[in-house]
Amino acid sequence: MLYIDRLNRVVVYIEGAVTVLLVILAALGVVDIVLKMLEVTRADGFMTPEGITRTIDTVLIVFIVIELIRIAVAYMQHKNVISVVLEAGLVAVVRKLVIFETGPDMLEKALALSVLILSVGITWYLLKRGMPREAEPEAHDA
Figure 1 (cartoon, rainbow, N blue to C red):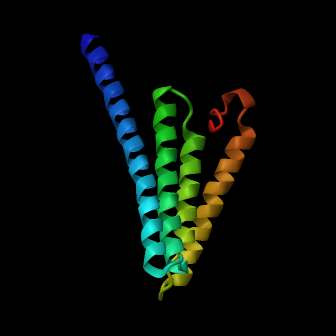
Figure 2: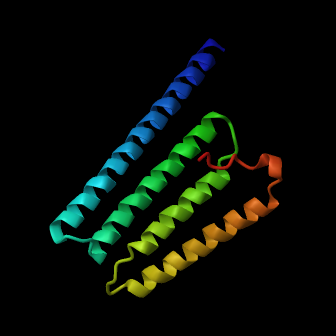
């Protein structure tokens, strides 16, 4: 039993370390967004559609990291993380849709993204609809 207690303690420390690293990554992402905006506006005097797309891509990546932080915190608190994982998946798929690149296989990629968005969205909706109010994870704190 002593080994199990030690292993559990190590796991808790690893979870905490990963969460701290994700917070640092999110903070660096915010700095990167500001720098990208300054760089894009300084180069042309205003933001071009390409610059806006690059900035939005970085913003959505930061949101994905924030969702990962929420997952890590909920996991450490032994809460149900399935809906939070699905929300992170929705953000990740929407990010791919926003920065969608055209090319020869554009139709296949668009169909795959559509299927992903529908399946994750429907799963999230059904999970939220079937989940009792008290079992839902806490809402985002503002």
